[in-house]
Image 1 (cartoon, rainbow, N blue to C red):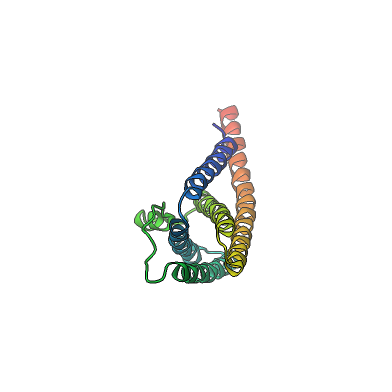
Image 2: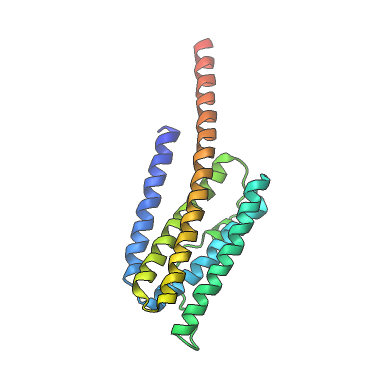
Length: 193
């Protein structure tokens, strides 16, 4: 299977996973959704901390540091809403595939473009899902201020997704060019043999 086809199939799989998770989350109670988002924001902070610490490129490193700060502020804002709606209660322990934990457990390193693309796909998946969940919350919450906050958070997640997508598209082209060069080299070697 070609590299391009593999990448297309992975993108389709990511979108399917996002939609499946969103369908499941939208059936949950408000308390469960807020709990899921709180856990998700912590996970996103972990993912962007990993990228910030492991990126050799200074621009991306700086951008991921900004993302860490934004995700931390999201956690605080959602937690404040949770505490206002459910005083004295702790967020529920919601199941969440923690990408930050997986990367840490496997001692994952960014060794090449393909590794970076993998992490970018994870980030894109996470941001799409987060944006969609904030929109679901915006529809469920009654307080206009809470709705406004959810709208802002959804916009932040969309901005993060757009940055990750630009990075992904750029580095996908780099990887595709590299793959094409390798294929041409292999064909020349076979022709010469």
